[in-house]
Image (cartoon, rainbow, N blue to C red; front, top):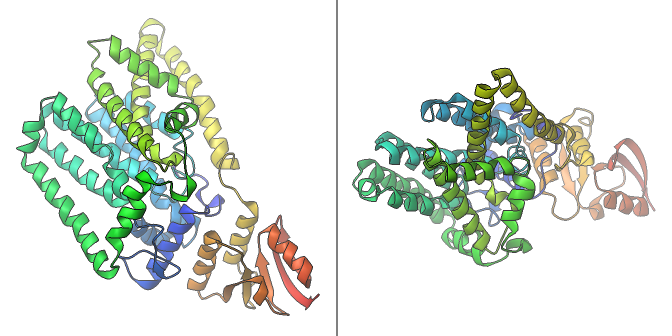
Length: 458
């Protein structure tokens, strides 16, 4: 599920396409500090560059295409699943909780989606590091395991270096939990805490300092675009009511598993002696604070709540495991296994249908035909012009990748197309303009993708 069909869908417009161009231009320029778009500093994306660095390295290994772009995300989802399984064995002492948590996570509609585990965006990698950070911190509060505190601090730094302020949103409830557990004095007297604090300021501060030296208004851009500006202003018109994320969690992101999640909360509340009661309460606290924080912000996008899904998956998995144990004791292990199979089979096939058939995902067959054509060798004998209109970051990436491979391709406006040009495009609106202006000979066509020769102006 993590790696299946990654190259089958074209680069998604807007954020994924923007990141793809950031990574491509970073590879071409050798500038690993300032992310650029159209070879100038990218003021639309001022986040820290860990993911873009990894995407550059990945595309150098797997190709400057969808697979190379998305492989770091697929590996992040895989690593998150492995971590949940390992955590349940190491700290919860029951491998089945980890197994169920993995299955709940990858069958959650909101996680295996655009901006989640299916496209080359920040949020799946962010979720990996935030999950490790909060669970390691919980371990520290339970046994004063200072190694776990250091792991929590380092994971927190990686979360921030992945998606800037979004990696910080669990800090407040973590400190609230430390106060509840009477661990604040122990925390502030720990050497590992100060190692983490110094590491944060050295790593994050050094990057900000260096980039601000190269891009004078970088700090102002962070404030305007990525922190205060996003909290108080509706960036690109993404305005929704206060309850947006709560409804989204129930009706889409965690729709199939929400009853198990709620039942897990109720079970932990009423069963005072339940061994996972404190862990469930801690995870619920994190989810509540996170949802409240992003709900209070003016700009709202559905993937902002993604880091909650692994935490909710653990709560749902714990309750499923309790049902499994009861059924195994009162009936049989085979009966319990049938119960597990029954509850997982429907969401599994729903998610599989999504990633295999594109149900619910961005799936522009015309763009995919165009990108496959550019990557092929069917046009290499003569220069190719790609007719574009408006903002086309997705096609810009494919053209840039072909240029990197020294293929004779360029992007032009229809106004600059010439007699005898062999052109391609994938939008119906462009075809309508060509029909009005040119006699042409279609060489290849699929849906709204056309490869043609311009014969004569009308």
